[in-house]
Length: 346
DNA sequence: AAAGCGTGGAC
DNA sequence: TGTCCAAGCTT
Image (tube, rainbow, N blue to C red; front, top):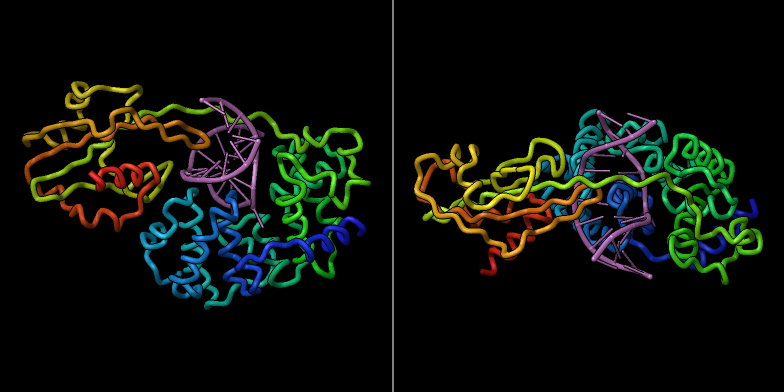
């Protein structure tokens, strides 16, 4: 209880003034939690304001098209969050008659909501004493109690959840949960934590054994896959182009130019000889020019995508029916958007 | 169980 | 420059 009391006291004096802390409306808390999954406050803030403005209630969100939702989400990454948010909004409106679920178990049923988010919403909005365990909580608990279990192992996940649950102040679960997270984000930071002025430094296990830097422990990192993209940026005499909706993997349901993926970088000769290139342009007159001077490298957590954007000027054809002026209305990846910004300024 | 899923900031 | 990793979830 001393652990919680100290953190809550620190929290009440040091918490940031964030917009989702001005409300206990579960729709807004849910929205903020989804936006903040694996995302920094500084990065998510603008998106929270956009979504609140466009979709002030779950009904407006449910009425929107998935394309509208993805367009608003554009640039934030992890787009399944947007798809699941939209799906769950429709579920709340149609199946739950617009009534937001009020318990951990029922909130957990929403797509895109796992243990963390269900605990956060249930505790903050409905005073249910369910402990949150996010990256901050792992770090604070691992350091303070000197726990060396891997936070990404089945055993570690279970262990930390149980400990967090034992530590929660059942009278103020929402405040307690936010206190631990805010403390992890601002005091017990990943790098250069402020141990000298930490209110828990006299009882911190890892500080006593000089192991703060080693904790939390995480099992081996992922390996990166290299991919090679060739985008066919069609530009007809009528200023039209072609966009395709992605149907699998990364950037699912976002739009892009016709893509030829290869196992290595290819040159123009290989490109125009490619089966998919010939299939798209068969008998049309085309002129091909590489837009970027150096291959564009787009780095994601799990893959490095080496991309060439090929401008293909061609005669008019009804299969290229997207007006260039309307390209900006489609949700696209940051990779494609970066290209568009450069292409438009030319 | 382990891999897939984005982007950007900090050091 | 490369590495870490951020209010995680899904399959």
